[in-house]
Image 1 (cartoon, rainbow, N blue to C red):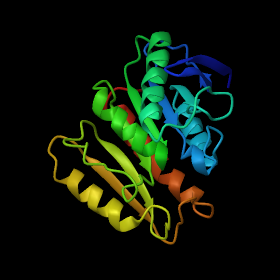
Image 2 (image 1 turned 30 degrees about the vertical axis):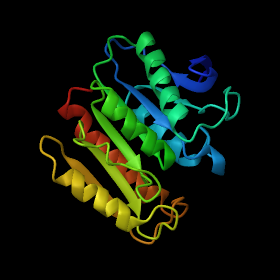
Image 3 (image 1 turned 180 degrees about the horizontal axis):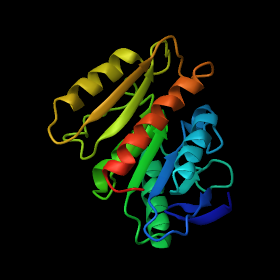
Length: 217
């Protein structure tokens, strides 16, 4: 899990990157939760997402948004962080130009950034969004959502309300050409402390189904 430093739009960005040397190995980028509440690339859910893609022979990057850890710059309410994510994906693609798949996975704030990036990068073949903060940020940019993905929400989340995520998913279900898998974990809070096994059971099942379907293995 080598430490990496690469150029971002507002200075250097710190990350952890593991490259699979197989020709055409797929790539994945993992985005962490809100920096203002202590979110960083070592968050437990962010770290485990990284591990799940590694186990499936992806080249995987997780990194700190601007102003977090050793990343330069200051928090920019999502605008600069989206630019950070775009630069990070450019960096990974420069190292893995023949990757046959590209995935984005994010948790909370990172899910919001990831789904915005999804709209801008047609090469993204799949996404995982855990507790996307539909009550805190505007998701109407997903019109239409260009890729199929997995959304997981906790039923007892008091940070991101299930009712708002339900509405987001309903809008996505109505769109043609994509398939959204939506899983709700009973009694799970925003941090999934007691529900990590169930959360990542859904993630594993989804990846193991989708990746072969689009030629990732």
